[in-house]
Image 1 (cartoon, one colour):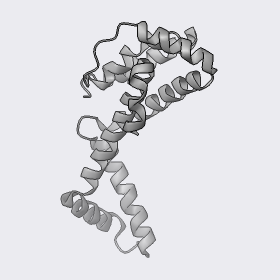
Image 2 (image 1 turned 60 degrees about the horizontal axis):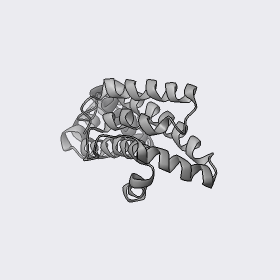
Image 3 (image 1 turned 90 degrees about the horizontal axis):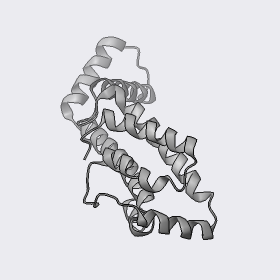
Image 4 (image 1 turned 135 degrees about the vertical axis):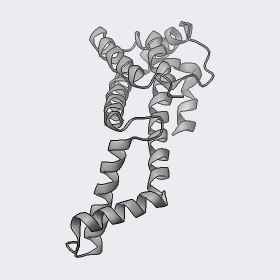
Length: 173
């Protein structure tokens, strides 16, 4: 998705920062899950835990798969993923989904003429130069341009979500 996001950087800098930050969070989570699930020690632990808890009650390969998936989900939610603590993973995902839905609905509801005007307004805003800053800060930085596309109640809701995300992830870079 990264390549599709890049062409928004000059025309819609606020939209670019939102899309880039949300995309990055999902990349981090996916990569961390892959690392954890490929860890041999975790597999040994999962199988021994299932054996101890279920003994001979697993009767098929599908049942074993379901139990292994359930075990990994529980473990990853409890211990977290590298930079992100376990219990907050779902909160981060939920907040980013809300942000993405809110922002994308606002942009897609605009007509072409409104989008051209919006692009001009966004580009006139002073943003910190984009050099892969902290992604949690990018959500806050985007507000300068989002003020032209979101209604006041939506902008307040966006600000609340972005601030909560930032407080949980001040250095997600």
